[in-house]
Length: 124
Image (cartoon, rainbow, N blue to C red; front, side, top):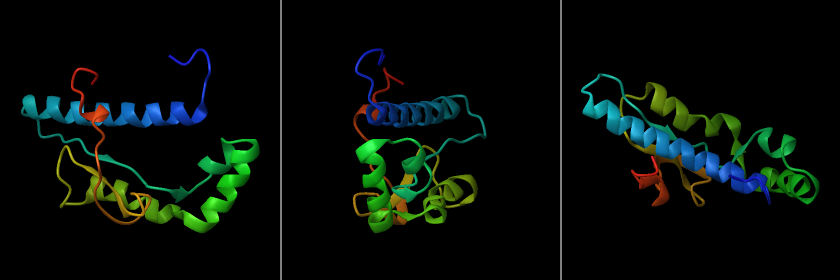
């Protein structure tokens, strides 16, 4: 719990970890139940969206304005991993997809790196 020393960046990271834990655990449970439903995980990389302009304040709001212009990919490209998971016949259940270039922030979509924390079945 972040009742003290709240950090929006840390909270965002924790929410992304929770998403991964959930998606991977859901896939395990669906496979164990022999259902014809599948679970996938994906991320958009660093995409130029309103997330960087409506959340941060002060220094970070100005910094994101610059880094979005220089490094972020268009939001439409950030949507590709989601489209792959929702409609791509090549998507593998239980897999994690995202951009593969520039530290997984932009570029062609393929298998993304899964953190060790996200693989912790006890936490899931």
